[in-house]
Each structure stands twice: as structure tokens, then as C-alpha cells.
Image 1 (cartoon, one colour):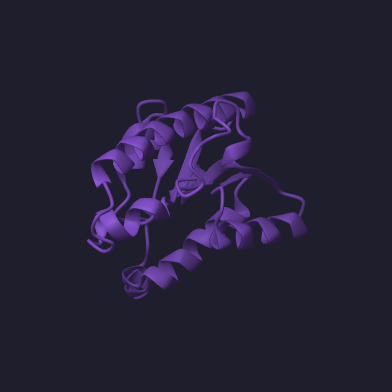
Image 2 (tube, one colour):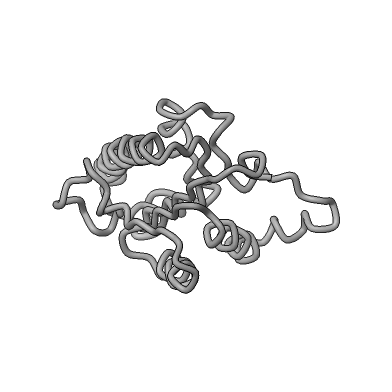
Length: 163
């Protein structure tokens, strides 16, 4: 159970700009060190903005929907929010008969979407079909969604490929 049944925020973290060249070794020639440095800077800003939002809304827990190869965001976020209040798919207590679904990235993504649809607040990725789908689900029930680019502290000139 996320946050022991209390309200929680879901943050969709994805940085497609680095996934292919830097994590999967495709698109050689991309300066990964520079790109990862820029992503780290944006991640720090995003985590500051999210922590501020959670404090204003008096919500202590967050679920981060992110690829398993992109968990550095958890380290960054845990400098602002106690790690015990940050959840990812690996923290979910899943009955044995359902664990096989968590080995499939597509099925895991569906679980993340359902968790995001039920959250008190959803923070969507800047440009993402996944986030857009969750936002549409949430809009039908009047739930609050923020695009990460709308939060205070996120510079307007951030590379759109990052957030």
C-alpha cells in the first residue's frame, strides 16, 4: 500500500533525451556526460518544486513512476523528502501470483498508470503520451494534475527533450 492509505502525489519522471544514447548505447556521438549533467540540474529543480508543492498541500508521500534504469531521481528526491515516504514499483507489496506482471515493462507501466490515476495530485512529464493518458483519466474525475513545467522553480527554457 502506498503511504498507508493516506493521500499521495505521483510524479512521472522520464528523460527520453538520454535513454537511447546514454542507457542503451544507441545514437553514438551524443555527448552523454553533458546531457546527463543537464538532466541532473533539471532533476534537482524538479525535486525542489515537488517538495515545495507537497509541503503546501500537506501531503507527505510520493510515488515516482519511472523506468527502473532511471532511479537516480529517487536519490535526488530523498534529499528533500524522507526515503520512507518515497515509493516506486519495487516498493509495492505484490502477491506472488502477480509478481510475473512486474517483470514486463508494459504491464508495470499499466500498474504505474493506475496508481497515478488514483493519486491526490499527479505531476505529469512535460511531453509524454503516458502522462497525457493519465491526465485524461484524471480529468474525467476532476483530479488535480500539474505539468512539471508549470511548477515554480522550473525555468521556461528547459530543454523539452528532458522534461
